Amino acid sequence: MGKEQVSESVMLTASSSNESGLERMSGLDFSTGFRHIIAPALFGMVFGILFQQYVTPQYQWPSPPQGAILCSLVFSPVLYFILVRDQANRWYEYTLGLAFPGLIFFMIWFSRWGAVFCGGYGALLLWVWISTSWGRFDLPPFRYGVWHAFAVDLGAFSGALLSYSIAL
Image (cartoon, helix red, strand yellow):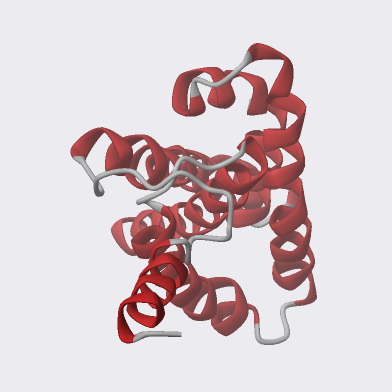
């Protein structure tokens, strides 16, 4: 095997390193950032404020992040058609993507043991990682749901903190 054949095989191996099957987009643009980072966080923030002000003081349950997660599951078909804009028959995959980490967050906030770290700070670190790495790809609806569940959780947590601090 000559030097030319070795360098050609190395180049072919290096160029086919994207084995994930996901198509790479050119980069994170404003539309992607708004639809998958800002909008789900604002959704969570609005419901976090509503639950902090009106629901949780009356009934002592659910906490604002839990309420926002429940509302995101109820409104998941609407969120799917507004934010993901994929095939109409795949909305249930998005709902499952919301439900999987949503159930974990729901249990974390329910346990109250380490909830601020696991449901707040730890989720923030994972959400930043997801937002910086997944934003470059066209993803299946399930992964968009996972991404949005983190945003809803953190938005609700920050909305509840904002509402609480203003009410003091």
